Structure formats: C-alpha cells, structure tokens
Image (cartoon, rainbow, N blue to C red; front, side):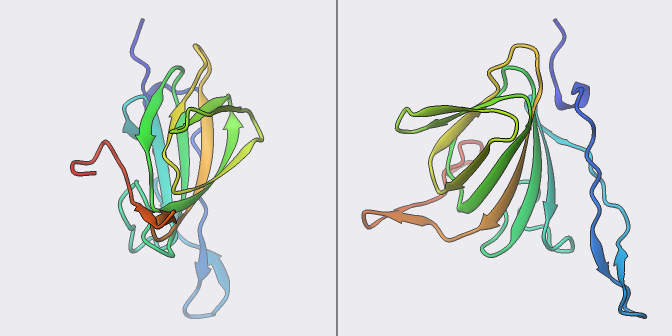
Length: 164
C-alpha cells in the first residue's frame, strides 16, 4: 500500500480570497491571491490564513493573543494528532468525513459533517477513524491567555515542540 500524504488527498484545494482597501480610492478590493497549498505534518495537511498577513504570527501553528487564524486541516484515513493544549479559543467545523475528539478525561466524541466544537485550553487529541475516507476540519483560532482551573494555570502543551 502506498503512503498516504496530504499531497494525495482527494479533497479540493481551498481558495482563499482576502479583501482590503485601495489606498488611492478607498474602495474595497480583493488583495492579490496568496498560496493555499497544504503544509504537510505527517499524514495531515494544514493551511493557515493569519488575520494579519504581513505578520503571520507563528507560521502555520497558532496566533498570538488577540490575533486570529483560519486553518484548514485535511486528515488522511487513520491519521492522528497527539494530545496537546493551545493558548487559543478554537471553533471547529467538520466539512468532510468524521473525526474523533478525545479529551484527557477519556471522554470521546465522533464529529460528523456539520458538527462544531468549541475548545478553550483543553488537553485533547484528534483521530480520523476512517480506513478509506479523508476528513476536513476548518478551525477559527483566536489567540488567548492561558486558562486557569482551580487557581492553576494550564499552559500550552505541544509535544511536537521541544520543551512543551
């Protein structure tokens, strides 16, 4: 069996249109197109659109406090993302396939097309439970301060970054 990578996904490449203003006329215009290619992370492809294109925050990962990021994530069949916690408020919508969301409490939910999830600093993991169907989830992320629970700060935890 051939390796499954974001470059052999059967999902359409999303187009990104950004509006701005013409400095000469003050009229609303479309800015030049920006690349929409998916950046591979294992068998997951990610595309990020920062709120401030000239200041892309943290590359393809997370926005700074009070900044936003729109991210497409295409998940190959069977792909996973390990437990992690971010300093963001995440709003996610499943557009294709199904995704399993697991919390550190052991609770799990299967999210299907049209389902939404709101996360704020929770330790969680993702998995595409399908053997043959790609999944696409679109996330809107708002950078936020760390969550405090019972007086304890729950900081960022990113196993793919050293020291997290």
